[in-house]
Image (cartoon, rainbow, N blue to C red; front, side):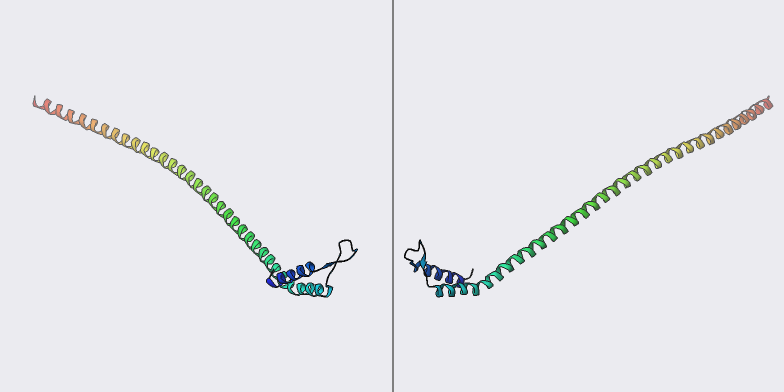
Length: 152
């Protein structure tokens, strides 16, 4: 409360302190009712400002709480979206690793098949070359034998 209301309340206390006991009143006192009414009216006149301040404080409190709640919800929403993105990225990475392993396995299998086919081809060529060379060697031996025969 502001100082004015405090001063008025202090004056109300003084009026009550100056009150005189009412004879045979059973604890009742005589007070200056005009002065008491005047002070009550002064309190009423001065209270709206403080009530307005209290309402503004309450309004600000609600506004701040609502803003904080909205901000918290926004942060939570962003965190949930980021978590979903991370999970999605994780799934993409897992899928990429799976594909990479599949491609590597396929490449290794293709490499083995090419190596086997190449070895078979080279073996066939070498066998054919060996047959040709053996045939040529046989011809050379026959020619050599024929030349020896003709010298005799």
